[in-house]
Length: 89
Image (cartoon, rainbow, N blue to C red; front, side):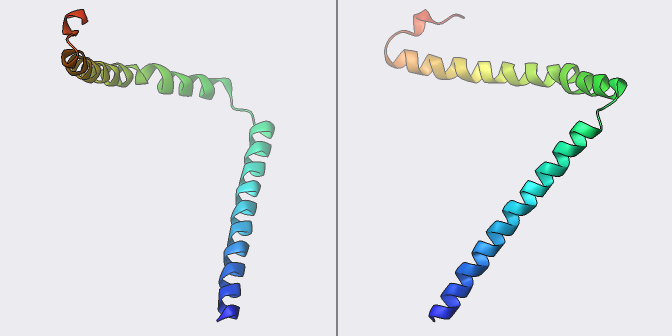
């Protein structure tokens, strides 16, 4: 009974140490790769454009819907205390 409990705990500890080691190796390899192989200017600027500029419609649409939900929630909260006239149309 005690030996199986110790074996289970030992196995969990070994798995945990192994996982931390794998993460550390991955982080080290990525750091070495980033430092030793800098991206080319054309590739970097293209990715910046695609990630930044081309995502603006998605951000604008999401912001619009979040704003509408916020306005509705604010109206209900202000209506409960009699301040709904303080909201913009």
